[in-house]
Image (cartoon, rainbow over all chains, first blue to last red; front, side, top):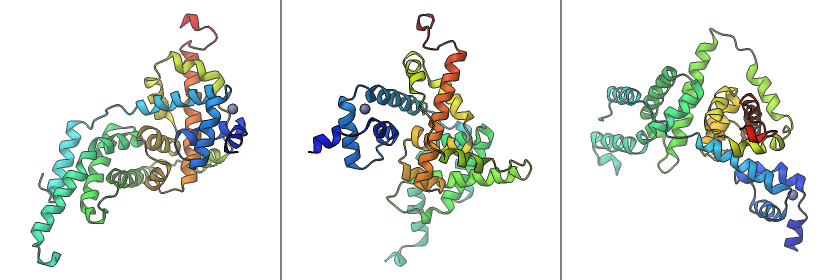
Amino acid sequence: MYLTETVAMDCYDVVRQLWDFLDGELTDESMDAIRAHLAQCRQCYPQFDFERTFLDALAATRREHPAPNMVRRKVLAKLRTAGLDV
Amino acid sequence: MTGTVPAAELHRVDARRFEVEALPWLDDVYRFALSMTRDESDADDVVQETFLRAYRSWHTFEPGSECRKWLFTICRNVFLRLRERDRRRVDYGGEDAQLEALASEQETQSSFGENAEILSHVDLGPALERAIGELPDVFRSAVVLVDVEGMAYNEAASVLGVPVGTIRSRLFRGRRLLQDSLVVFARDAGLTARDPCEV
Ligand SMILES: [Zn+2]
């Protein structure tokens, strides 16, 4: 019963919700239904894989982008004038 | 009873908590500020002002809540005030409102078919970073908070002071624009899937 429900999930609905799914922003039921659909749909899986690779590449741009030392020094100096003992 | 603790001692404890809980987010706040200003000197100003305000309103921070989110919210407000000041000199018109309307339109076509090959062939980092920088601010802030900083939709919504549905539509529109930029990048670089042997 549950299985037939997930099997019946439309490709259109799956593709429409791929990003919500990848972001983990759906209900547990929808997450399960899409996961089940992707496991057996040869049409949707490549698109899922594409969007996942794309989001991974986006996340990787975070890199370590540390604040320059000068900015750090200025912040600490400002906080000291405001009374913080650093 | 806190009344029996000397004020100086309370201040010391508070200051120590600020040092331990807020200051370690300096790099994150700087990165977020830079993503909004896209100018290092402006980011520098925004970060200083953010930490000064944060320290002065430290008593309003709820212990145990997400300090990074709290700092980002202050940072966003500092940035908006700075931009507001600049806007009095340069008239931007209703650009943001138009973009917002664009974002709420039904999601555009996925560029999956065209892009599928590209992702597997190219180091996307530099192209993506440039494309993020070129996104209109309303989309860039959503993409940076959720996709780069890893926030949930509701956290990003709280930082930007908009409903969760707005984050979602801005985010999805921003992602599509990024994917479109990648297609253009790939074409310019001669990396279209048509002739992968030449890559
Ligand atoms: Zn399918």
